[in-house]
Image (cartoon, rainbow, N blue to C red):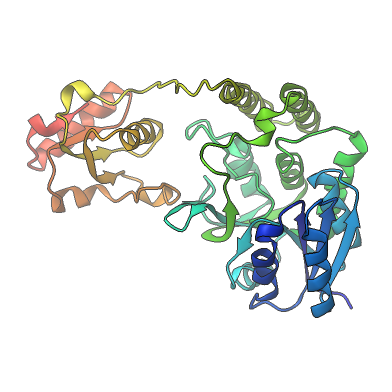
Length: 386
């Protein structure tokens, strides 16, 4: 039987979470799927749990193998997949019941070659971060991919982060195309532990002629405890493996006219800096300092601007109990759906009680123009800070 969607679940020592993961896939509203569980040499009870689930549902196939890492585990799953499309789930994560129903319907309606949704970074029931891609939701054909996706796909210079979130698990791919992309990577024999998803996703996007972006979040990505250092950062071969990733993607991007090599270099510099966490060096280099000297402690503030400066101000205020953000606004509020704090339209200023409006821009001429606009609308200029 040829299924429409193959779900590859990779498992390595996740017995504590595995049942929740597999159940979330089995309970999907979308039924035209097969489930391939790849046990990548687990030393706990994961193997037994995989076999138990396979005995209860004919849609499940299990591969038990020696540990070779997530790239090979996913590749082994894709290689035997019967679906026209494939997606991935990590064994300690889980998904909403309507994820595949919603995404497959859109994918088939547009006959697209990839669909990407948002993602939920899950620390606890009380601490969940909803994220979307840093590109506007919608359908993109080949021309639009070239003009609007590729120029900030790997690194968005305005947001200082990925334009397209690199995770494979919140996306659905054409089986044959993702198989060839993974095969190309494996044949190069590079070793990664950081950036495995990037090494597959971004080369894949270069091969396709259509994709869909949706803002909705369906995939729960379980986060490590706050005080635990990520294993890839503790790896003594971190720099060697990071450089392998850099070399491979630079080879893929060679000759590209969309600035991908520059994006890759900025990502590389960012990743080198991350290694400082291994040495407990968590000091943050702040480029844009909140104007503490102009805002009284305990004040109610409105942040005006949700770009790089506004995000920096927001993050600084979240780390200390200095003043209260009562509103965050931007003229283009519709493009900031992925912010932790909801960004509203500037007209909402007039419905809010506040002590200061802090203008979040490094350009003096823009600040002056915003201040002039606000004062013309009756706002006291003593309450405007920049």
